[in-house]
Amino acid sequence: MRNRLKVLRAERDWSQQDLAQRLAVSRQSVNAIETGKYDPSLPLAFRIADVFGLAIEAIFLRD
Amino acid sequence: MAWPRATRRYTVRLGVSMTVYVVSLLAAVYLVGHHRVDGPLAWALAVLPGLAIVGAFYAIGMLIVETSDEFVRMLIVRQVLYASGIAISLATVWGFLENFELVPHIPAFYWALAWFFGFGLGGMINRVTLGASGQC
Image (cartoon, rainbow over all chains, first blue to last red; front, side, top):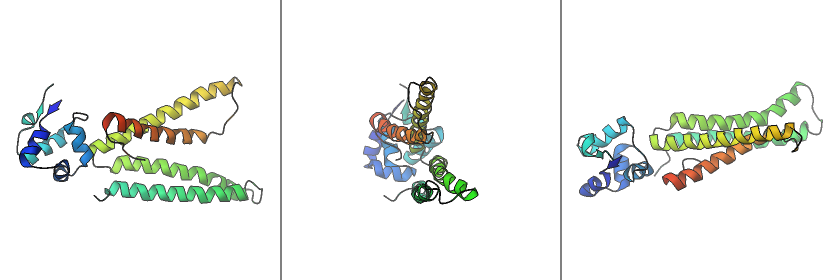
């Protein structure tokens, strides 16, 4: 699954650590999701969507 | 960044287990190994090092239960799967070889050692494949 996390972070000038703190996860989790090595659970995907104020499908894209 | 609560609790539990292991092993070797005690006390001393290792398994199990970060939890579960697969496989193959008298007998507690080797190897595989190691 592809995602737009890196672009969305850059638009807000957030580091991976900034996003990790907002999500209450580790920086390595954000990195793994961002690089497509790990697909988040639905609850975490909703938290990510909430943090960016977007719908899940505006962040995560089908391959 | 401060350690997550689950990691701190794991570190304490593992530290206690390893301390009990070292102290009880030294006591068992000295007292039971040299026949300075016998009966129930010998049994109690002889079982303590094994129970301390069980404590390490418990610490890892509780780490999985208490880790709230789902990615980190997955890393640890993968490590446990590598550890269990390696230890059980080695024990099974060695058992057959031993049964046919092709290899010498080795004490069963070495399979716990193989498990911890697999746990460490799993961390390295996590590092290479997922960019993060999990737990050591």
